Length: 75
Image 1 (cartoon, rainbow, N blue to C red):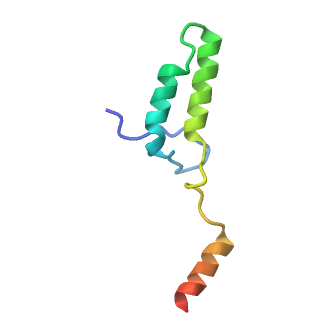
Image 2: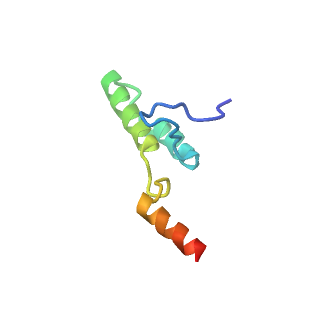
Image 3: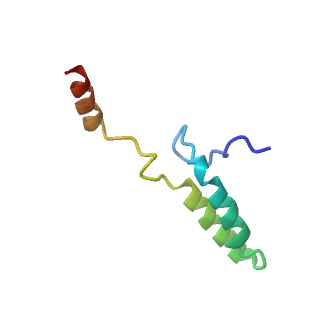
């Protein structure tokens, strides 16, 4: 079975949000044009690109914000 998403990203260690995996499967089942070869590749690439897109939830805070939080925690 599938235990993790394959790494196709140029960013080392990036893993897409696996909570979005059902959306990918649905897109592959419903939005891919399986009848036309070019359409198939185009729509499959679009579905995969959407899945691998970094969402706002996955982005780390900028370094200046992490430093500010560390200072607040120290008191």
